[in-house]
Image (tube, rainbow, N blue to C red; front, top):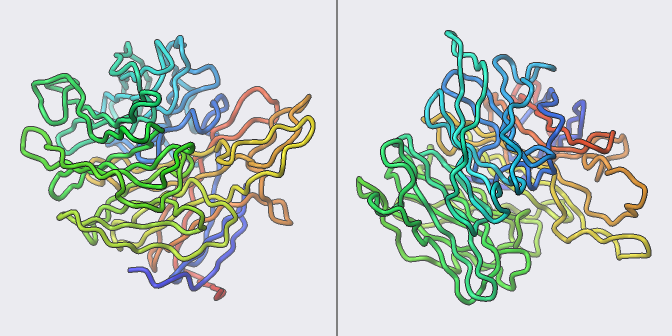
Length: 466
């Protein structure tokens, strides 16, 4: 499938520099960037896990963006026309302000008129809640308004939720729960219109399933879930928290039995060379051309990404990237072209900061990321996701009497354009890629969430071998 990186195309767009490393005749790119919202919290809290959805496309072709605002409320904006047109996005509809700020909201459509948002926070910081959302539409299908129902607490010890739609119109969610010094567990629940929230394996039980449990390493697990559309199996893959000594991926799968799923045997060392932390969390996608689930993870202490293809029998094949010309690659995620089976990997360069000095606070090695994703939520194209990430600056700086820096200005080229890198090609076919990210507003009080869409095709091709 992969023949190595052979060509280099550099393209300048209005808001940032797009650098694409390609293995085929990727040609030209153009991008339009608009502001979706101006009140977002920082990206690592306001946007969902890599395996979930921030931007959703409904059955009528309308786009919605789900995020957490600076006050901690879940917010939804929508557009009934071209999402790249300035001013086309609606004002935000907001949930009531919670006691504890919401974080990492994962949204799933359950019908053209309903949606459920799974998020951390609400009554308490460690809670996992289900927020029902109603959409009203006009006779043409345009969204007219958004309203929020009362949240339901699903767990009182939860972090890093992942939520996906299932073949039957339901929802599968996973989340991590840590008992400090004792264990780290990935749990799961299933929602259907008929039963509400139940066990994934037993529709007559309301208790969550234990998908993965590690009693020797009680650090965080950032896990994502996907459903195969061919045999309806569930796959859960996650990496370890940034304070973990282990560089392993964890894995489990569940086979469909008609009324639910039966979990298999967990594997706490599915891979042994994975980077740790939220910024290096795994991403999962479906490749319909090869009928494989594609797992993407950052290979520890390298600038390479592990790309694993998992077939219906559970066998895996590596098609890893070569070394990339990045100092510290983070927030990698994969998009699969459903017609050709080509892969597009998006990642960001976030070099570590300098040593700490007087009056300067050193950022974490895994710097907070202002990031976002765009994913096609059409139910007949589950797993087809398009996304791009932009990173916060990682270098240390004196924060006294300073407004937050524009995170997109980190790692400029000489012309002052922002950097964005995509690795792996769109091959001989015109495709459209969209992404969204969060950045601080110059007034120092709010953040903006921006949306961009680029068109990449094979016309007017030009390439420079590297």
